[in-house]
Image (cartoon, rainbow, N blue to C red; front, side, top):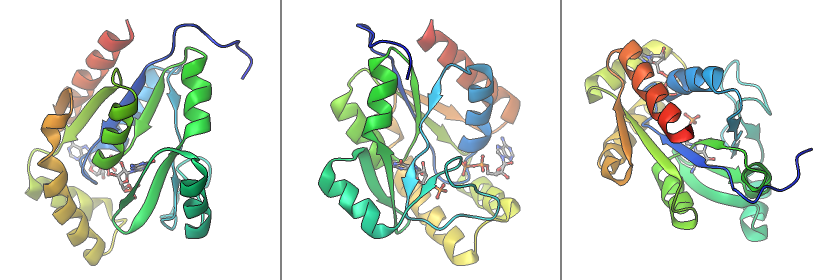
Length: 192
Ligand code: ADP
Ligand code: 5GP
């Protein structure tokens, strides 16, 4: 990083959603319109899905590497989601915010709580599907997951939705254009 440390730290944005609610779709637009927002590529022990690239979608690492990271304090936050580990690099996050840059994390509810515990001024956003039925349809339509995985994700979704009140902002992704507008407006406000 070329910039010197900045006395004013950057903001951390945390976006969570049940799998299939449209987080990737909505965040893509946020990243396109706010190119100065740094995006943290998470580490995971989940195997890559078709089309996913190491270093771009995730850093795909082994379980033993991840567990070594837990012992070594590598993660700003980490959690086990759908049987796999996921974590955010502490080093990457600190480099961004210590230099006054803003950071976007796409992480689950367990991770969001850990970040908020360390960074009380982190901005938290939860993306909701209009209904569990709609979520199921989207997961099937996406065509990336087996039936067993879809069932597990739906079960998890109910638990995640039950925690939506933890978040400062809740965006319901029913009509895509409307949800996109809502999320862009809130980022604009928080970054102004
Ligand atoms: P997530 O990242 O939360 O798992 P995705 O962004 O991959 O979800 O979206 C899941 C599927 O739902 C994708 O096929 C996406 O194109 C579709 N989708 C996203 N938003 C909407 C919406 N508002 N209405 C209908 N389909 C949507
Ligand atoms: P997926 O396997 O569908 O890409 O992601 C599954 C879940 O893991 C999603 O809820 C996603 O937000 C969450 N996730 C992705 N990266 C991280 C991370 O670094 N930390 C935590 N806590 N959750 C993550």
